[in-house]
Length: 160
Length: 333
Image 1 (cartoon, rainbow over the protein chains, first blue to last red):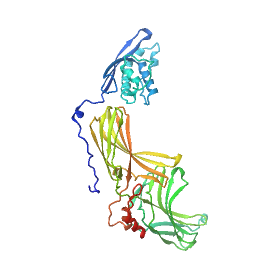
Image 2 (spheres, chains in turn blue, green; image 1 turned 90 degrees about the vertical axis):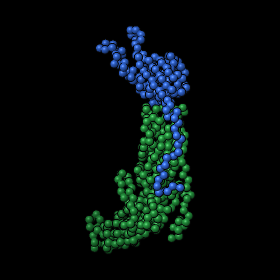
Image 3 (spheres, each protein chain N blue to C red; image 1 turned 45 degrees about the vertical axis):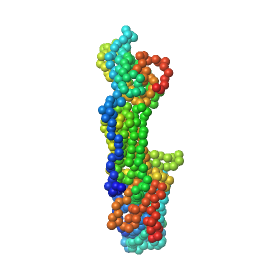
């Protein structure tokens, strides 16, 4: 019986860490890159889309390495789906830039290099934050956005 | 008549008999100031003298009686008018009459029961005080002397550890353990967190001590939470199989013993909150209640006999451990 006047500060017993756990690959690897902006279409129907590449070892994602092309409105769609169906506070997207769509601008408007870069960076931050959230990972819409060739807007919303 | 400016008046002064030897304890007042008051324990006698000093010597002071009261009361801040007195003792010092000169009166409240600890909180205050009053026809003259009461407990017989496995399916599984469920105010929380599964990117982990003060009953219950301490126990991303030790010294924080349903008016409970924060500032947490108790100091020769007995009294949360022999001694005297 230890002397009660001196506090017992001994550590509690613990299993020593397995070497395979200590030096093994992390089980929380998730990286999404938004890059390679391309302008598609002609004339007034031009728009920019980006390559969204995901690499992960989280078991909840079917593909460990996936690559799709997405445009700004696809990100908006994802944000709306998550706001409606999941209980998380969805981070904000980079701005919609309506003013850039008006005619008679001095610069390239929506296709200005610096603007595209700003938008690319904001979209990358957005998708990384969302995909890492355990509650968002349960939503069918996130998996479709990241890993399906194209987004079926008539899909049935639900959990994975 | 006092409003003519020539009426006789008096100053009252309360002095305890053991003012020289009795210990004082610091207690925070409502406005946050820390003052020192005489420290008493349950069962101790409160005795002293009341000095009534006439303002104008030579003139007579007519009065309707002089008395001293010992009061223990609970005051809810949202209901200031109503004081709930759970201890109320009176000693008459003088029958109605007149004082021709300044006078001193002795008083003694023997073995006063002080069942609860003095507490000043966010929405409620429990205090003990002496009040000497000279009653007069138009206006009374009174003086109060606050004291502080501490309730002591002894090492609880049953003090199991808190051990639990919690997590989010497929994302984060941890097993945490704290060595005890009941801690005294100068104790150390010794524990560990063991990571069974980590699929999120954790930035750091901390333990918070939360104090919850509950006032009111029925539909008017009000909880006031206050984070007393935040103690970081891990910085960086853990992996599966890692064990993080916990060693949190409670003496550095200002806390009171846990109080359960005091006089059916309020409670003060303490919780340990284990918080994990990931790279995206998301917080994952698990709260566990702990019981805090006050340990009596080491008995010293200089302590009064009554204080020694009081410091050795047992007091569990459901009072099963009342020390038989010692309480019998008290009752006989």
